[in-house]
Length: 117
Image (cartoon, rainbow, N blue to C red; front, side, top):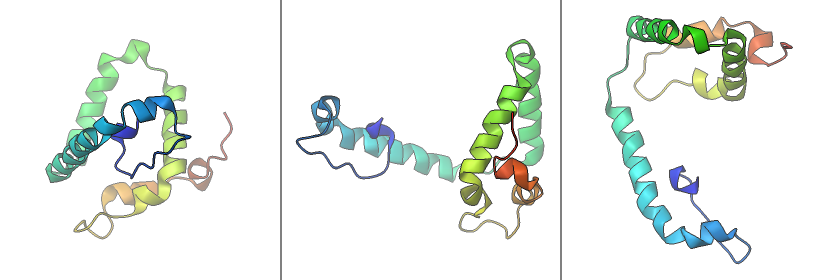
């Protein structure tokens, strides 16, 4: 797991043996992960129309194995946990992109995870 993180790792005598065993490999994996995220950042942004079309197709393909309430719960948990990061705009992004406007229009109880269920 640490090999997929971009944060620094501090190992000591009390570190778990699995971390100590693979400690020498972590820097090479870390460079792979950093390159992966850099490559993703270079990709062009997907349009809302393309994203909606893709999600509709995935929904159609997996309709029999999809639990909508479970998915909504996961989305709400994610939005609740990362709402500030989602609202922040990346460097060079437009001031108020459509996705941020839609998130800002999400009811407070949903974002604050106060919806039961």
